Image (cartoon, rainbow over all chains, first blue to last red; front, side, top):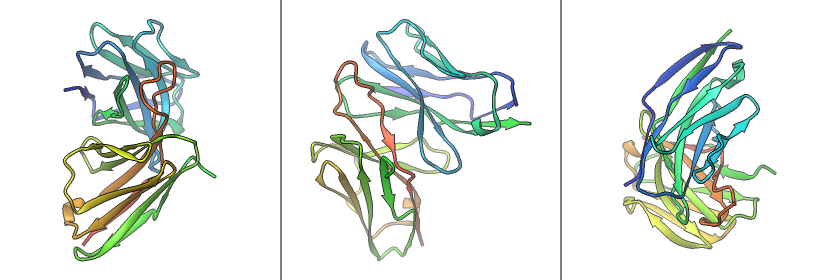
Length: 114
Length: 117
């Protein structure tokens, strides 16, 4: 069975600094998606960034980038120039091609200090 | 209109009540989902519907009864719930799975916070 592990329950970062959130996953599949979602106190889960497993190039969305290591089954999220609005729960998620299921990790709570 | 709308935002019910949660998506998606989010637990997938057909039931107790009348609407009927069912219930939608090149991501509503007394 596929699993997603986030080993950091909480992280903190100073405004304008960089922080990296860790995620590992377990799968025997070769075709899948990986995602980072953000859930602010308003509760709505918002997609931050997406990576398709067949793409070797790491995805980037403005200040957010990933380090995708397929062989190591690692998918970390780097947030550069952190802002107060980045404070939220961050969830790593996995979805195999041709399936409905999106499997989430337990989340990392990110605090941003001024 | 926002992409995925859930009502009510908050619900308090007794163990003998019957209530329903509603979800509506305006994104033209074919798949809809219910997730349960409890404190200090991973999000739990409950049900998935694809083109109105249930494709996933993750061993959910029968006191939770889903209904998907069309691809835009999803309900979760609640009956004889337990206090441990108190949680945030999230609805989501997505394009049909398995299409290479499509995003694969789910779009979520804001959730319905359920408290069972």
